[in-house]
Length: 140
Image (tube, rainbow, N blue to C red):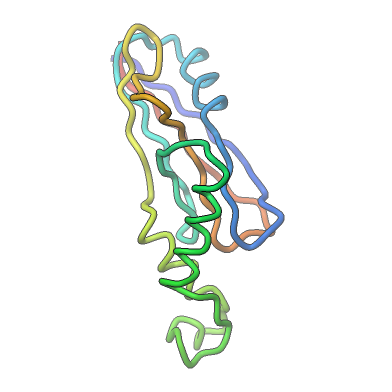
């Protein structure tokens, strides 16, 4: 079995945003030479997420609104005990927990084995600085 690892670096200029990283994952798969196996895509930060869904701007706006309702940004230490450490991103940790840490996609005949409309996204909930995404591919 072979393995391949690639790290992407991103900097989302806003506090919250979504980035379609499917092209980068496809390129990594091509570079790996793996034809059958699995791709793991992992947000390497505890205030970010990787998820699969449709690349539809209305849906992404709905996510932002929904996440803000569930875990509103509030830098004060009253709402989030985490902010008592001097941080202001307690909400971002909750948003990441909701959206998840990683995705795994099957590789079949050298291609990502997606269902209709599926794409891979990086979700940022405490942006404005450089962060990393790991792509790990294993197989033959």
